[in-house]
Figure 1 (cartoon, protein in one colour):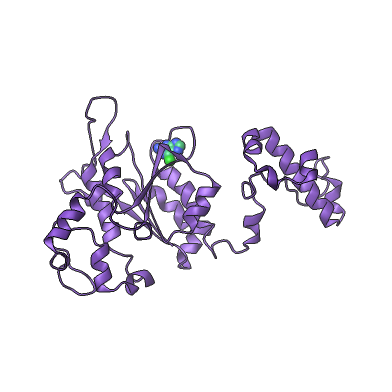
Figure 2: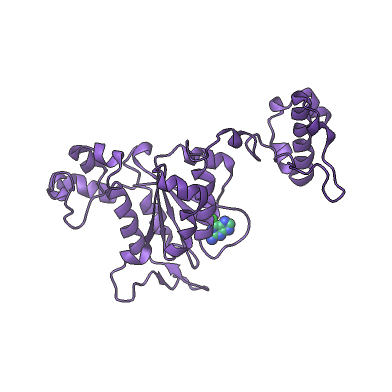
Length: 299
Ligand code: 6GU
């Protein structure tokens, strides 16, 4: 899976070099690149923000640096990846954004503009609706407290994608027209971590990349560990214990020492239901009644 993150604080994403995700990058399972939005500005001060139309507190992110950054990600397949190498020159022209300056196609070494007729170019620039099929447009995640709420189901959905792009806003957000414009080249998804406010998208991207990345096949060494965790069955995880069996006067549930696997499984399921009912009654209400067995209903 290819992941691109655009931010004015690329150092924030340094944590993605570590642990499981860092290892997956080293192993080539994740091609993750972080891009500095300021590299796509053209003024001496590398300006990315300006005052909001209509007034109000704070600043808004200017549209053009975002358009330049995002165009650079759809126009250029990640160098050296099989996907990039397999795309023929003719296919490349179709996925190319109508350029305003001559861009040299890396495969044919001829200017891409010459391969696109003038009428096609005008249509691409003005088309109000997406011209690309879903599969040809990567998902663009825009972290925002105003987005749909991120959850394990969305993590599973995103883990099946070939290419994810994350656009980290700061200040009061990104000029709304960027999201409208981007729909031509991306499937745009504003996504929130929950009902609270962060200063920018970077911390949210750390969370989402970790949640999605660990579901990519091969990233987690033992895939069994993905099956029994919180939210995989709509319930919270059961409590776990390790040695010693007596610790500071506290024991563990006897059944866990019984060796009776059916009884242990029943005990754990009951603990899941009990804990979920107490901490997250909303999850119990959201359960499909079909997934509950008779013993579940008794708990
Ligand atoms: Cl995704 N972004 C920001 N800025 N704040 C948030 C959030 C995201 N999710 C919850 N709060």
